[in-house]
Image 1 (cartoon, rainbow over the protein chains, first blue to last red):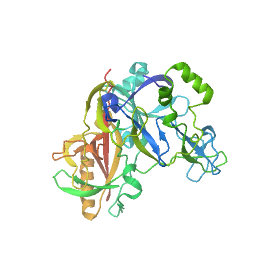
Image 2 (cartoon, rainbow over the protein chains, first blue to last red):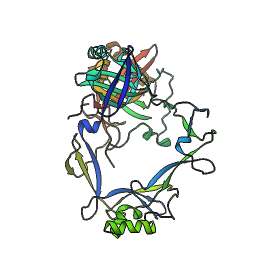
Image 3 (spheres, rainbow over the protein chains, first blue to last red):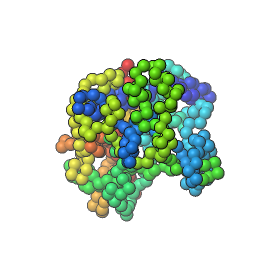
Image 4 (cartoon, chains in turn yellow, cyan):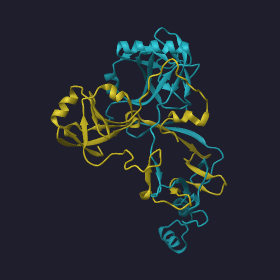
Length: 195
Length: 233
């Protein structure tokens, strides 16, 4: 259990310890490495196009430049919406307790995709909430995701919305193969752990 | 967007389209006065100035420390701060020399992170496409079962390509809505295999959800690459 968050439920605030659940921790993982002719393990690096430099891990840094090519410190960057207007928040977790609302139907969670799964230390749950979760209720935690329980324990599922519209007979589908590398945009990334 | 073949409860198949969810706009970074910024990757120090390379030249700590103080060998004034630009990924040996050919080995780790085996990599081909139908397994799950058992990490909408597939998909959506369930769909000749959408990609379990609203329908393919479980201690 690493990260802790505060949850507000019916006026009571509980501090929950979260432990990240990943596919690697559940099922294991695989990664590919290269060996040289003598069987020694090799590292992956970047070769600049002019062939002058080999850049290993930690050899590069990412920076933001303005139109005069001056560096803009990250702390000075502001977020702007589609019209270029500054926005106060980029939608990340605010400080303070996350209000639980619900119970919500399973459909609410099905209209999202999970971005992270955390196991929750159930011993720290407020008793009313623990009882409700054990009955099968699902709660939405503001700015975080959904809290639910199953036979394996209590989980907090961080989500982002992924809702689709209904389509009718006249729905037009434009299949343009390989345009703008849209295939990658679908998230068909190589198997995790591959290098 | 991608064309796939999908079979229904009667074993008939149709060519349909897989579409990703609409993207949520992420606010772009700007300068404090609203000016545009661009992201660049710059060189800090090339590999030949790194610790391993310097260690080869100075085998003992004292001589390395003296060299660092005297001449800043870790800094390359020619390259430091330059924009790296497009780069190619290469393998380098422990001396930092790029390899012309590398023998690939796959290392398999258990859930505890311990290495289990080393083996010759096995290429896993994609099993979803126009010639490889997704099959209706007939195994149904309620929405509650799905959200409690699986983490849904990807989802796609299935839409029609013509009037015939519109009727086909609308009927499927109505059937699932009427039953109030999701159906498991799988790949392979008998529909038992998880979906592999790209060569060597993550295998996913897939569940089809359908709803209708008059003449309109919504068929969503929910993909899960992990169950809701506690990792083994």
